[in-house]
Every structure is written in C-alpha cells, then in structure tokens.
Amino acid sequence: MDPSPRSPPPPHVVLVASPCAGHVMPMAELARRLVAFHGCAATLVTFSGLAASLDAQSAAVAASLPASSVAAVTLPEVTLDDVPAGANIATLIFELVRRSLPNLRQFLRSIGGGVAALVPDFFCGVVLDLAVELGVPGYLFLPPNVASLACMRRLVELHDGAAPGEYRDFSDPLHLAGDVTISVADLPIEFLDRSNPVFGQLIDEGRRHRRADGFLVNSFAEMEPTIVEDFKKAAAEGAFPPVYPVGPFVRSSSDEPGESACLEWLDRQPAGSVVFVSFGSAGMLSVEQTRELAAGLEMSGHRFLWVVRMPSHDGESYDFGTDHRNNDDDPLAWLPDGFLERTSGRGLAVASWAPQVRVLSHPATAAFVSHCGWNSVLESVSAGVPMVAWPLYAEQKVNAAILTEVAGVALRPAAARGGGDGVVTREEVAAAVRELMDPGEKGSAARRRAREMQAAAARARSPGGASHRELDEVAGKWKQTNRAPYE
Image 1: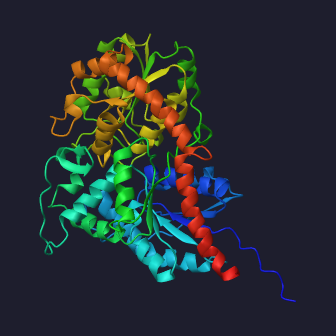
Image 2: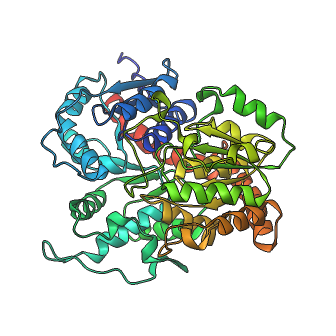
C-alpha cells in the first residue's frame, strides 16, 4: 500500500527590506501577519553597512520579532567605498542591494525545504531577477501607498519607446486614476531632476517592476479607492501586475521603548487638547523654519508636544545617517530665546524622539503636525487623529496630496504645498493648528474623516476585512505553489 501523501509544510516566504526604518518596520509587520493569520513561515532579510544608525534601527526591529515564528537574517556588509561621494541615498541603497545579491543567493539556497516566494521592497527590485533565477514567485512590497506606485507607473509609461538618455516631461497636473490628479510639483524630486543619476535608475527599476508577479502595498482600499480600482482594472486587462492593498501595517506600541516623562505629561492634559508635532526619524527643518514653527505653536495658544530634531544647516530636509539621541547635540538649544519658559505651562518640547504610537493613541492627543512619512500617516489614521500635512522629502508630497485631496484627513499650509516657497510662516502654523483644534468647516471635516478612516482601517485589517482577504488570496497562491512537490 502506498504511504499517505505528506502534508506540505507552510510556504516559506522571504521578505527583503532595504535599510530604512520606514521600510523595515512595515515589512516586519507583514511577516508577523503572514505567520499569525495566513499559514506561512517567514524570514525577514535586512542589510548592513550603509550607516550605523540605519543598522541599529534594522536590528531593533528584527529584535522585536517573535523569534519562535519569524526568523531574521542580516546579510554581511559589502563595500561601497567606490560609490561617488555625495551620491543620492536611493543610489546608495540600489547599489548596496545589487552588491549583496551573491550573499542573498547563498542564503536562499541554504534554506531547507526551499522558498515559496520572494518579497523584496521597492528599493530591492533587482531581487525580482533572483526570483526568476530560482524559479519562485516574486512580489514587490511598497511601504508607501498605491498613489506612489501610480506615479512610478506613469514615469515608466512616459518613457516607453524613448531612446537611451531621452527624458520626457510630465503633463501637469499628472493624471493618476479616474478624477485623481496630482501637481507635478508634488512628485518626489528624484522624479524630476534629470541631472541626478537616480532619475535613470528609477526608470530602470520601474521597468523591472513590471515583471513582478504582483505588488503588496501598505495601504487599504478605502484610503485611495479610485486608484486601487484603476489598478484592479489594469490587472484584469493584463496591462499591469495585480496590486493588493494589504495594509495598514502599524507597529504595536509594545515595540516602542517607554518615555515615561513624555507620557506622564500627556496624562496630565485634558482629553483632546494636545497637538503632537514630529517630523519622523530623519526629517529636518532649517534653523529659520524651526523658529517659525516655535513661534506659530506659541501663537496658536494650544497645548503641544513637540519632538525637536537638530536643524539643517545645508538646506537638506533629511538625515538618515545620524542618531542624535546618542550624541551631545541638543536640538532644544536652537529654539527661540525664552520659548520654553513662555510655553512651559502648556507645551513640552523633547529632544529627538518620543514613543509615537503611544502618543498618537493617547486620549489627550487631538492633532498631528506631520512630515507625512507613510508609517506616521498610518499610525495617525489608525488612531483617528487628523493631521497638518508638512511634507519634507521622498514621496511625502504625494502622501500629503492624497491625505488632503483624496482621504480628506489633513490640512496643508500653502507654503507646504508643491511649488510653495518652502517656509511655513508662524501665522500659517497658528492658523492650521487652530483650524483643527477650534474646528472651522475644514477642520471639522478633517476630524470627521479621520474618525471614518480609523474605522475603515480597523475593518480592513480585521479577519475577513478587505486587506485581510487580499493577503489571504496571495498566501493561497503561495500555498498552491508550495503544495505541488507533495502531491
């Protein structure tokens, strides 16, 4: 008698995250969810050697994973000494990933039982070539939203048939889907600066993305319904790979180190009375803008909790390589003279970091002045907190446009819009804060939409919700692929 067929093991999915906190964190949440709810085994692969602070962030996220269910692997360092000085951070990441492919290939071949699927993130598109080489499905993970994928799609379509080195102009406004358009000035600078080598790299990456078996996106259908539906139609027509909105992926507050003084201060404030101000782990304001923001918060008359980072002195709006929590720099020293004393009764300024998930979910928090990094956006949406959109770099202006024009959960000062002069005045800061805290028509609408999106996000990620079903569909495909050798 033939023995009964063996039961196949869970499909082993390997997720490859580029070395940015904004990418590693949602991929870690995706790995947890695949294991906890969708019958998969998962390994999260990260890189090292780009910057000590980025390595530390990746290591902290990996350490938060449940070791009994999600494996974490850090690839060995590779040399980047020959990359031209001053290269864009995207160029550095693309090169780091490309040079790490031999180490990744070796690791994948060492996995007992094989790999059911490879899921690299946006910056790791070259890993899709490795998926083809190994004969396994390759799905691309996008840490930001579906709108960002639409922008990339339009960039590549614009250059279909172009000769090498021929670059074409976007129409303005740029049509994304249905009635959704975006100002060209709101596109990432990397999509517009043809003199930067990363421009051509993005087009090459976008062409490679078309060969993916699908896209997993850290968003949910009710957040950007028209764009999601447009991608569904394109997939049905065979014009683009399937796009699965599987978010939101929001880290648990238990993953954050405590900050007792900050939280104790919030505990003493009335419910719904505090404006939280933070520009993420890498965002920077100029010295002038830092002082204008301080004056605006003071002028608003409202309570605030402000995470103050070291200002920029060279015009850059981000710094991925420095962790100011671990050096002697004091960002509070750059605040206007007497500001801390004048606002001590109603404001708290903290240096460099605060437990953001805890702060946003605290009953005292009523509004969020944010750089619109997508992780921060989803944390705010999941807490039902409306935003003042103040984008700084990368795709954040695209995010801000979606938050204000599509989702309706944010207000955006004129100077923080694409094409603005770049300096948000104290008057604009005070007006935006007051609009959300003493709601006029626009502020009331944003607060109402924030509550609606909070409920929609909870529905999407719950068992049986739209995002849960999308991820279950993809996991089902991986299980079918994994089952074949056992039948």
